[in-house]
Image (cartoon, rainbow, N blue to C red; front, side, top):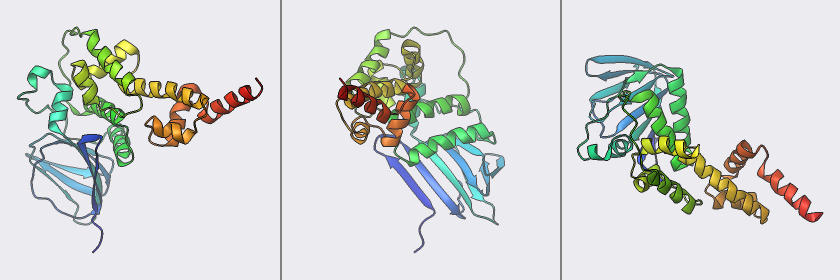
Length: 277
């Protein structure tokens, strides 16, 4: 039996996300809905995206967006196969990330600014996010980038309202949680719960308070700890594994971006100084 052209990727650290990768398929779909918010990249081929009275011709390099309950069907051109990736985002997680707590009990679907786009920037940004999910993702980084993508490119802009005063202790509790779990992966939802804020507000307020987003702050903490471990003679592979980096290359890349040298060079110079001390 030939392999299915449809593959699904799920990560225990990101239970609110599911990635579908379809490669050179010719399947047709009847009109259907999803319980999740859906974001898709058209990687190759062409298709017709029907929803409501709309019939949109899709081609490679375009993106599609759907809210829960949108009746739709995307079917390929009869003359060729097509390839696409679709990210399904849990609706409850979306509402917890963007709505005030008092509106989460009986939320209405978040309004989308568009249902498709041919903007190459939107396609590239979503592609980079999906590429991370196809590998070994950092959950906090993925959540941050996803919320920023949704805010900038998918959702209807929210009304500008007077800035609401936020208890600084809430943001500090999120920071304390990062300090307490430097070596463990943390989801944005955990930090939001600790702070008493929705996820998107936490990202903004955290950056205002500490100059970095929660994920960047987490990486900074890990690199501070990495320098301590390198001074103690730990190997690069052990440091990368202990501190939750995807792999040694990821660790080295993050270290060099912040310190303009590689961890190997940093540790080698320490050994040279010690040997001549």
